[in-house]
Length: 132
Image 1 (tube, one colour):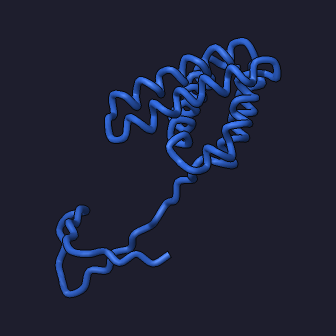
Image 2 (cartoon, rainbow, N blue to C red):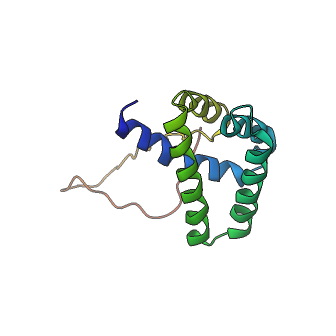
């Protein structure tokens, strides 16, 4: 795997895992992540370590520094895992595809009536009603 792709997977994977740890979905995904890190031999140790990280993530709350610290721990762990087992990147990608929240793109269409606009920037104030 190319170094840039690995680094991107490490960074986004660590952030996504930290985010999952703060949700109820972690109960469903934790055993798969433990197996991925434990590689079938150290699953119990990996599970214990992940639960310690999760406890710190939950305790961090709005403390961005504490959350960043735990994300850094996950990044280091993922970097080591991918170096030793490159196929683990595919496992992580599959787990995140299943469990990580998906971004939704919402398009906004403004209609301006009875006005002259002399710029390509419009400032809108008030309430936007969103229909999906």
